[in-house]
Length: 159
Image (cartoon, rainbow, N blue to C red; front, side, top):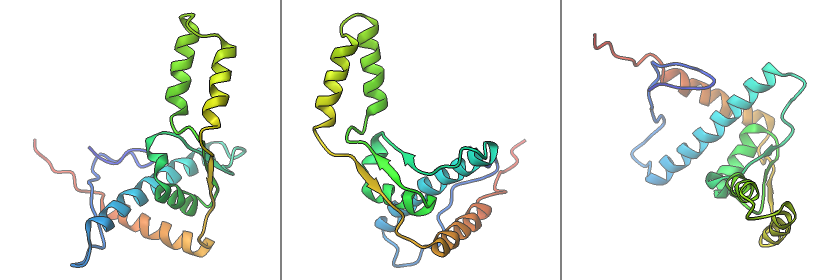
C-alpha cells in the first residue's frame, strides 16, 4: 500500500481526479499512462538531484510498456527530453537469454552478435521528442503535484 519512490508515503491511496459525467474508459486509460510518465520523470529528477553531474539528456526505454506510442510521447513531453525506443522492445530479456546460452556453451559470443544484427534489422528504432512548451510542461507537472497531494493522508487506523 501507499506511494513509493520518490514519496515513500504508506498513507497514500489511489485516486482519479478531474472526472466528469463525460469521462470515458479512454480518459481513464490516458490518465494511467500519464501517471506512469509522471512517476518515471519524478524518479529521474530525484536521481539528478542525487548525482547532479548526470542530468538526463535522453531516456532509453525497452519492455512491454514501451510499445505504446502514446506513453512514449507523453514521457518525452513530461520529461522534456527525447525518448529512444529500440527496434527490439525486449532487449533486457533477450540479453539475459543470450548470456545464459553463452554461459552453458550453447552459443558463442560471435553467434550472439550475428543474431543481434539480424534482429535489429527486423524493424526500425523510434525516437520521441517533446511536443509541448516548457510552460505547458510546468503547468502539467504542477497539476500532477496537486493530484499527488490529494492522494496523501488516507491511511486508516485499524488497531
